[in-house]
Amino acid sequence: MFTSKDQKIAEEELNNSSNLIIKGTTIVGNLESQGNIRIEGNFIGKVKSKSKIILGQSSFVEGEIITQKAEIDGEVKGKIQISELLTLKPSAVIKGNIITKNINVESGAVINGKCKMSKFPSDVHKKTNHKSD
Image (tube, rainbow, N blue to C red; front, top):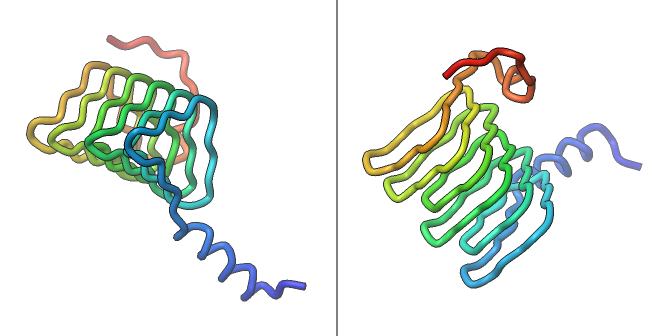
């Protein structure tokens, strides 16, 4: 049996663990993780993490990204939902909509889509009926 202290340690280890998709690899499907995810290759589908997703310069993601924190240095074609901080590095190319609490866009990054900033992380996953262009 786990004590609450053991459960807390196990949960922290999961959140600090990392998954790696290397350059030259293509994955089609959905990926969900408690820990960090680093993508250097291609991913087509939905990728979700309760921690952080990092996309390297050689990465390409087509689909949906949902996570607490993200650092993007590659290309994304699709929807990005971040509950805390999104960092777009100089070679980032975003072709789609972003919903995030906070965003840091470094010089050179490209966004072709809408960006909505929310004060509360819980608002990130809510859908609204508002139309704004």
